[in-house]
Amino acid sequence: MEPDAASNRVLRIFCDYDAEWPLWETGLQCPEDYGLSEELSSRLASWNEDFQQHMHWERGWAEGFDVHEWNDSGRQIAQEVQREVGEGVLVVYGV
Image (cartoon, rainbow, N blue to C red; front, top):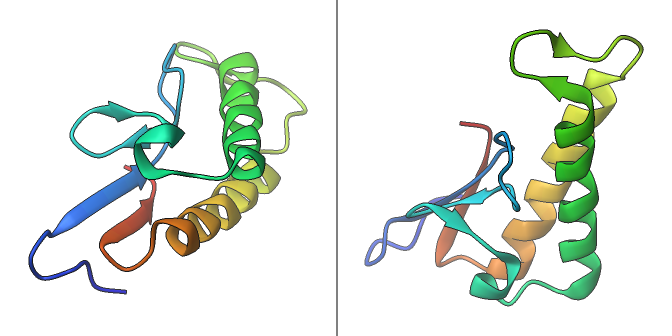
C-alpha cells in the first residue's frame, strides 16, 4: 500500500528498550495519536511488554522465548494498525 501522496506519512511498528509504545513516526507515538481502538491498543501494549520482558540488549532473547511467534504477532498487529489508520499513513513492520 502506498502512503497518501500529499502526506507521505510512514508509521513504523517496532519495539525499543524502555519505550512505552512500539509506534514510531516522527518519534515515539502513542495509540491515541492515531485513534486506535482499545482492543488494538491493548494488543500493542502486550506485544511490547513481551519484548521488554524477554529481550536483553546484551544477551538477546530469553531462552525458550518463541521469537518467530512474537514476530508473526507483530506483523498481524501492523496489518490491524494499517486497517485502523486508513490509507493516509503507510504502516511498516520493523525498523
